[in-house]
Image (cartoon, rainbow, N blue to C red; front, side):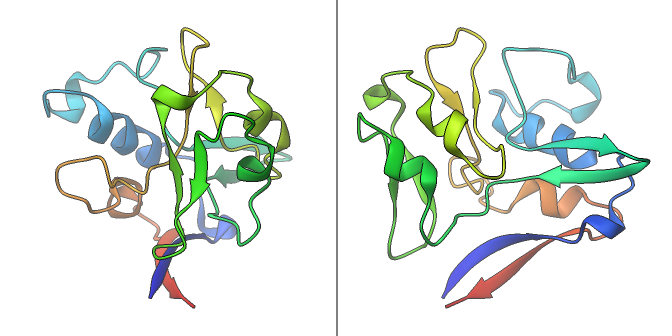
Length: 149
């Protein structure tokens, strides 16, 4: 079975726990979240929350069935893993054209600090514990994991 991050925006309170947990999970050294610099451009979260009309909207990679980011990636740095259903990214192959950034219908990937690659959700496959940090950190359970076909 494939797994997907599911969002129930009506439960989001804008606490940014998911963003902090994501940043902490992807920084080297495994230090405490309490020493995390939330304004650091060198360690961007792989998700973000925007506010509109007093409501919060979490933005995460949806691992689309027909992903625009993959279709527009000219260098082949993005591909969809048919077994897991996840979008995989090869930083070494990335041409930093940012077509994926422009074409994602959810506004998910973003340029890194040096504008040489993109920052995108890896479903925590590149972290030590492999459990999705954002899901674990959400106090209202607005972010969950669902198995899909």
